[in-house]
Image (cartoon, rainbow, N blue to C red; front, side, top):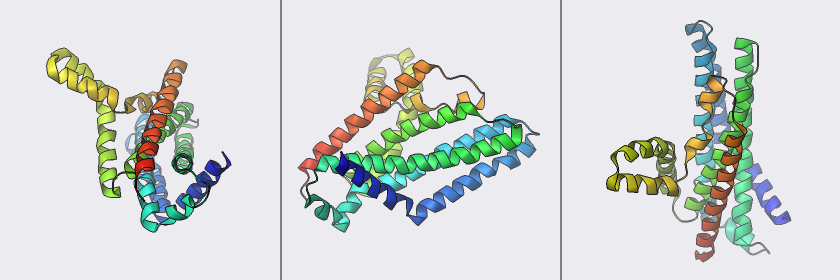
Length: 252
């Protein structure tokens, strides 16, 4: 456990020192603050402000996860730092798990920072905090956990460009499978079977999108949180286990 913590801490430190990450956060803050201009155009209506701000948190959180995770294992191999780590009493599974928690902590910190800026904007505009958005942030971090696990899995077998491309494709597929399955169910046949296969194999990321709840201040059912947490935990563990199996067989 101590080894995993040390790897996670070092991964987190390396991530937060990256200057490009600061640029991403800077653009995210400017994006969220620009929602104040939308408020003027909307004549004080808070809905477009919240919609714009939450979209910024979501997009830049995704960018940060891709930037950090797409080359996490590949980069260690190219730099040959992995050889030094493996020369110590450290297993490959500990490296995978430590990298995962380190990256997740870094991306979660970015998401929390953006949410704080967003809450300040909402408070300035409406005089009250948006508590549902805090729950939406927690759901987004759970989605980011799946996405980081996916990126680690891809990074352990392919180059960064390919892993980034695959992750983006899977991201979009994960957000349209629910609606696509509902449409295909009306048609039936081979199309329905194929989409049903994709629905159950690919991550269903729609479970974590609570932006509509936050924008319209709709209470989030507790059961939704339990299901989302369980799904994120199981899917992340499955991806990390597959990454461990592939990484274990890889010749270094």
